[in-house]
Length: 182
Image (tube, rainbow, N blue to C red; front, side, top):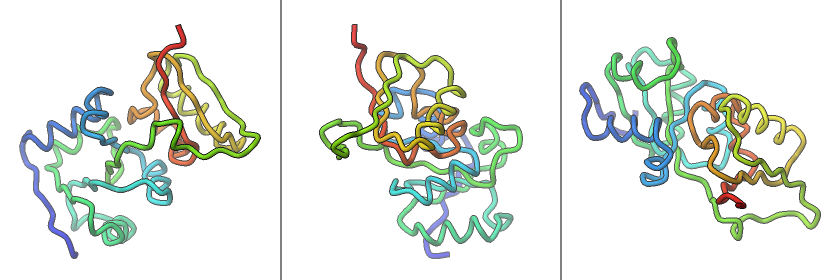
């Protein structure tokens, strides 16, 4: 393995940052980082153009060859080996995937999005359910939507529950949260 594993066995500053970006939309933006859980979402992230910032796991030796190969593909990402207790505390699922990943926040400025001359844009006003928003994003991806705009203060589209329920579709359709129209 080319890069150094950083062991995290107690709730230190790094772990607290991970916990905060998992739970708090303001902290995600402040740290410019998103936590990705769920194997399908992680696979989709690896296939997207998003930067992999950190790869988290609980025991390197017990990782599958697939996970070890992904680690080798991202030599600039930080490797965090969490104690089993901290890893399970960070995960939403009782049986979490063998790895979790963080990525940098995507472009959220409309002026930086290039659209076709006749774009298909989906506008959602204050979505209120994590799972439903993830399903809508999967559908938007299936229908080749060019841009998703989310208005108002609803569910944060970058919450790990939305990402997981989108099965990684969130990494393929540009998404811009906007202030409320009222």
